[in-house]
Image (cartoon, rainbow over all chains, first blue to last red; front, side):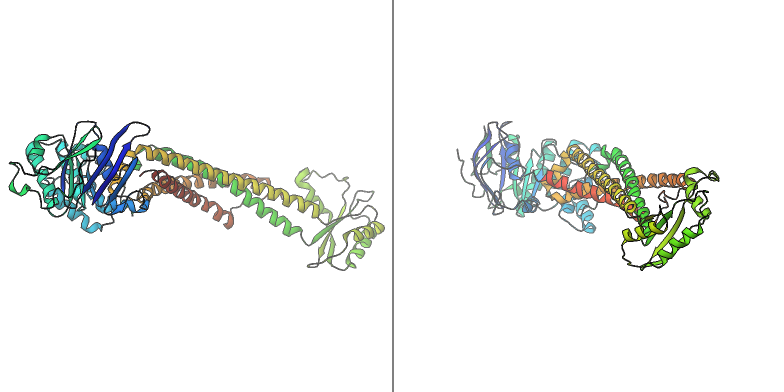
Length: 247
Length: 294
């Protein structure tokens, strides 16, 4: 699914913000990504959604080497990745429906089916009566749900979420996590970056921890007693065959 | 295909100034092109009117009247009509010669004692070739002072002038095209900077560079077409005004400023050319800029 080998990243001539990252996300795995502010979580996610090129090392995604792949093929890979940005990054001039429909339209979906699919998903996240509303008039929690809907509308193979519960209360946060788990159960690989240790403890998924640019993996072999719900138990392949920490 | 505007391009500042700049450029290009086409058509008419003809000019008689030395005229006509290759030769009447002079001296201002030469209009057979120098010598013998003019020097100079002006006009049109492209590059880069955030989102979601470029090129085409049509309308009004003023002069040597089909075709193509330049420039600019993204 996604493999990092000795990946390093620096911006310009600055110091490396990620060093010797080795990682393998198996298909259908579910990981939390955590670490202190400035540890490189967002940078790691950018590498994962092909928003950046590594300064060194190798990244392969869906069995394709990113360094050698034809640039024209990258959009096809990106369409298989759903991203929930920390600050939502919704397009304010588009309605909620059009924001969520973007991945489908970019992928060339037939317009006749787009509206039905989007409306159904927005209803599921509780925004069924906000189809024609524009983001500036939405609350942060509503924006977050729109951003999540946009990330999952295309049934991505890999879902990356940067602080997806940062703007919602605990109940709504758990609801979002359950949505991610449901997607995970049907085969989507999920990586969620979050500061919320309390939220992480409610689930048994392995944790990728970034500290000073280096990645460590907490496999969390035994599921903790979680108030989340029995259905939040990780699927059998959750945890994947991640390579160990590399530092 | 971009079925709707994913980028709010109509809200940035580029839409305000680009149509006006394109209108100005198309207006100037229309005037330059119209000048070139009309001059080309006029020189074509002059050339076709003069090709196959020559003029013999017999100096005025001592009395100043052109028809007072019939013997000399008859001798010249006799030489001309017996020269192989000459189909016909007819002297112009005094009134016709005065009519030719009047545009310079003014109607009715030709003095009665002005020495007026006899002009003989010579019509050549098609593809006739003969020695004009020998003919001139022959005419000089029967009528001393007679000059033979085959218009070649005048036609050559006129064609050279016409071609030079045409080349200058086309250079101006090309330079205007380059300026228009540069303007579109600037506007497109501004748009890319203004909408950088939204473009990044589209890029990450999986939009191809051409998908994003298509939105810019459709916008650029629309603005350029709008500006181009405005420039064409203004240029047409200007040309109509000039044609009206030129018509009052009634100068036989002035090019006719009538809007001919070829002129119309050339002018109508300019807004389309502007739209095409804007479309291609916007596309190339966006694709090149986005190619720097990972």
